[in-house]
Image 1: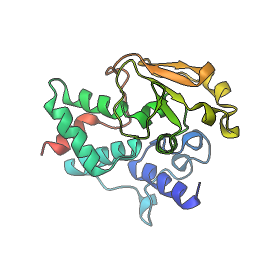
Image 2: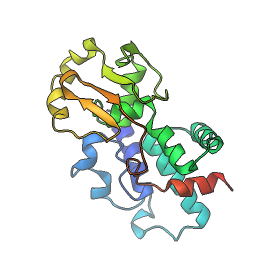
Image 3: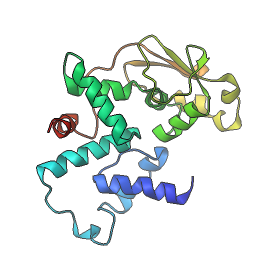
Length: 210
């Protein structure tokens, strides 16, 4: 990947002050930006951040969620509007919608090292949902659906070691992984326990409720 793209993603984590896991394996190694330079980007970064206002805290949490899932402001607003219309805990519903995106499920299954790579796989028509190609990363996947790599894609050299990696990988409880055929099935809706994130969704709700 282009170094400028890598640096841009790493700056997102440094601004957030924690790992957003945008770079796959790089995030777990010594090259991670948070490990090497755990302060905000810019000339004043090493001096530390000023105390944030309540609005600033809300904005930061929203930005962390957007960057983690790779979505834009309009998309986030739409998710919030839809979650608000559904009866129940808005925070739980909003997170469940984000987690139920096709690109996120491909990432959660371990078929991609990051959500951005998962979006590429989906957009380039490498992913099957119930045996049919679906190339819409934001598609909401319901319980019972089966997600898999297209057979021609699984045969590519880049994916020859994927099965071995998946055998050591533990997927979330609401997704059942089948490492043998590089597929998985959504077996339930994600629960609050499954939806632990490194951002506060309640703070995001407060931001949009102003």
